[in-house]
Structures are given as structure tokens and as C-alpha cells.
Image 1 (cartoon, helix red, strand yellow):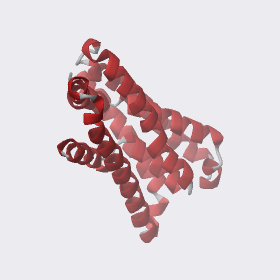
Image 2 (image 1 turned 90 degrees about the vertical axis):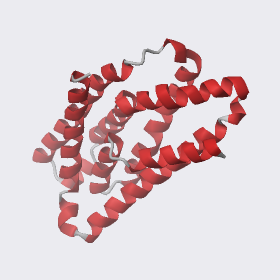
Image 3 (image 1 turned 30 degrees about the vertical axis):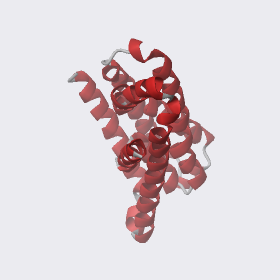
Image 4 (image 1 turned 30 degrees about the horizontal axis):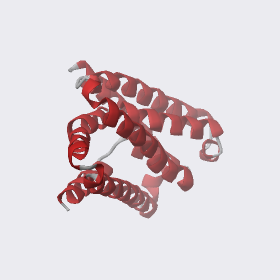
Length: 203
């Protein structure tokens, strides 16, 4: 029960905190593409976390603790690049054209996955929290730690979807804000990319 509560609590916190995935999802919400927004919120992190689960399970001892420092550079550049691309496209395309753009959808999903993989917090979580939990599972049986990861999944995705729906509902209530939701989401994406680079530079 303790591991379930710990996993769920950490998942809820992670799902409520602003991150690049939510900004990309909000950009799709602003374009009226809810299926794409939900896809971005669920599928990329699930794929990345599954990969990191396997990597941590088999190679935990060999992963340098400073890796978060280096992946932050990759994440920062990717976020700045996609945010700039999206803002640049706003100059030449209407909201409808952006919504129908396969290039925008593909780029959004690709950057969402890369942003999740290159987020410093992702590596910190897997190396300092999930890694030791998996090590505990190695000694006491992996079924012992399943509640931690199950609680984390439910807490994270539930909170992430709830936060996105709440912001979208607020934008719907305040029509003036809804017009600028796409702009705001991509500006925040740029700022997050810059913050990644600053954190990486500062070590």
C-alpha cells in the first residue's frame, strides 16, 4: 500500500506540473484536435517510460547520474526548434490550415516523444526514484513493486488529462483567451526549451 500511495502521489504531481507535452497538447486543443492532444499526452510518455523502465531494469548500474545534464541540451534545442516552427507557421497559415497540417501533427508527436526522453526530470526520476524501487523489486520480487508503477501511471495520466481539460474548459469560458491559446502554448514551449538549456549550462 505504501508503494501504491507513493507512486500515485508522484504521478499526480508529475501530471499536474507544466511540461512540454502539455504545451504541445494544448496547441492541438487550440486547433480543435482533441484526439491528437490526447494521443500526445498518453502515447509518447508511455513509449518512453516503457523504454526507460527496461533500460533502468537492466543497465541501472551503468547509467551515469549526470546524464540529465546532457539530455537537457537535446531537449532544449528540440523544444525551441518546434516552438519556433509553430509560431512561424502561424504567419502563413490559418488555424484551420494548421489543424489540417500533417506536418504539424507529425512534428508535434515527434517532439513530444523527444521532449519526454530528453527532459532532465525524466532521467532524475528513473535514476533516483524508480531505479532504487526496481532494485528493491530485484530482492523482494518484482510483484512487490508493481503497485508503485501502477499508481504512478494512473496518477500521472489522470492528472495530465484533467489539467488539460481544465485549461481547455477555461479557454472555452473565456473566448478571448481561447484565441491566443495556440500562441501562449508555443511561447511557453520556447521558454521551457530555454530553461532546459540554462539548467544544462549551469550544471
